[in-house]
Image (cartoon, rainbow, N blue to C red; front, top):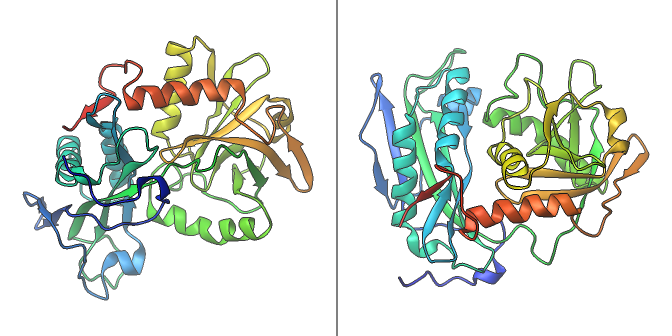
Length: 341
């Protein structure tokens, strides 16, 4: 297949318009059959519910070229289920798991020339999203919705090598108890924008949020879950009802126990424990794991033993194993890889 004319080695993480995207509309209580379209523009009322009351949600996943030349996606059924959970919380119509995965397959096949070649470190990023479309002036859910998936090629997250991150513990909150922190609502990310800009201006890579009820326990950052490695190589992740259930984080826990033979644990992690860990990393679709080298707690700099120059040894094993599964060099658990073509 002839690939698109792209300098794959110099791609950043930004939007590049590709050929086709998937669109399905919900009206009169049902979804239409859906279609691929070359039109990337969205036209709607100035009073659309999404513009007035932020009734929108999204997902993120990638398509890859494996070592043997196949184009695959990683666990799209889990993205589908997470969107279902989000839609139930935001009073949006359910787009079934089967239709979600089928739409992913259609978009990737239609944009196959935009899937970067194996070995470039780049991938095709997919953004499924849904929003309330009809005019709403009173505070209530929309009646009409649109589900879409677009695709854009993105470069490797660690361009130029791995650089461990410096986080700061935030005084602001990411999510409230009994709120929407456990679902992938667009409004959660809007709440974090002020804080991430401020963090960057202050010389930090990200904010580490604590539980908003007591500001005692570690939760996650504005865009990723966090994992810790103890000095005896146990993989520990925070447990909370307000943390987004990262697909990457859940996959890493399975990799840790089933592939690497490591003990894993999900539990409350107090701020005071941070200094006792050997390694830490942020996990998500973009990078799999971004190593954390330093966490600053109101002026106190806590440097993890893994350092500020490279991934810690356990984090590296987790990263290499999951990337190997995604890229086809390591056999995947049943159902983890969706073959496209």
